[in-house]
Length: 543
Image (tube, rainbow, N blue to C red; front, side, top):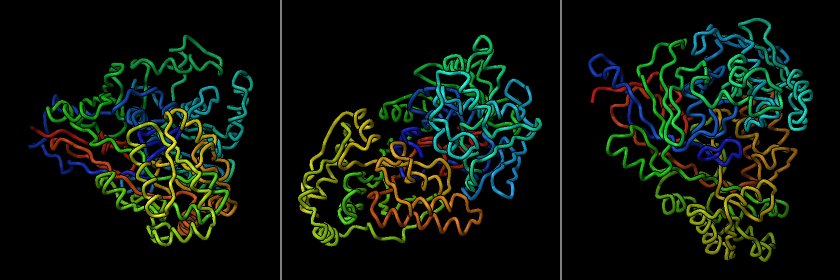
């Protein structure tokens, strides 16, 4: 799961993204602009913290990472399955514990052949506890054989780190075969293999940039290569030609990429944080793609104190909120009300459960039956000190006052403190907040609420054996129909017990110049960059 702007490590994120963009149509010699005009200028909003894909957690970082490095697979455009990138195919052992990836014959951007040992090295680099990559947990340390001790490794001890890394279920029996052994069957692991941080890396390049071999405890030397465009050697469709700090990153085609040569000869990601400035530049023609507006993080989450009390109280809070009014009046129509968990566009989307639907009379009765009206009135709604958070949460408080007759005060504090407190479970009620998908499989949503994910994704700290059992069963189930049924039951449990008050699925509106054609927009694209997962098939027409 990922954060709305898209902070993937802390994982605030929208419950899905709907993209609306111009573009499309076929390319012909008559309307294709000349090579010198094949330039795409997009606003990425923020400077990446790292150009090492294994260390990236935000969507504005992933936007660069997916252009410069290929993972083993990616989601198909319709999200129905995975399709080949760095691997052409894979086999799974009968016990579900061994994934054998058959690698593509491909080259690095400097012309050297990519080998299976590069994949082993890249994944071990990613899993090095001293580097504290944001996406190791839970996708990798909870699935790969030998990785579960990730959080307990002494990062001051090179021998401890080396022992841990050498004990991982990662191997390269030959140059074209990459083998991953799992700790337990995980039918969703093919989706984990689509994540952009799970890539090969060049040991020789990394050590050269570091000035030679270095201890596994040395995070600075391990990342020296990622600070210079000349040493960022990838296997993706593009390579970085220029890094202008706090201004832009320029990408050009990788001359050794395995697929057809792209039409776009330059992609420039600008780092304009101010939406009004970006919109002005779009209007003058200085930008070709922008997000309008930047979507706020949404989807309400529940609270741990009330969850220890009465389900009726939680359900009353949820059923007393008019989601249509929230979307129409507060978000100005920028979304669709949703009283269930998994959003439209994702496998597992199902709105048949109406348990949390708006019903103020039923909500008032539920609260009265609980006998906890006075207790609820003592609660506070934890709120970030941003305009958007205060506006949204004041709407919630007004709804509870109007429809439940309960006054709940906003507890407005700085965002950094809010993040600290929610990760410790120190609050009465918290929201609005939400999630964005990593890959279009139900497991990516279900893992948020399993026991043990507390303070990472599951700030409400739910621990429900029934839920855990359903998700564990579905995670290991190879039969697609059966696993879908198990995930559906798990989602129903969340909705029916009001673990979270699910509110709405926000929309994302993007402006794309009409001469930008050939975009394939999918549910897994980065925020405000429609079609970026397949920019190598886009092009600029004459204009």
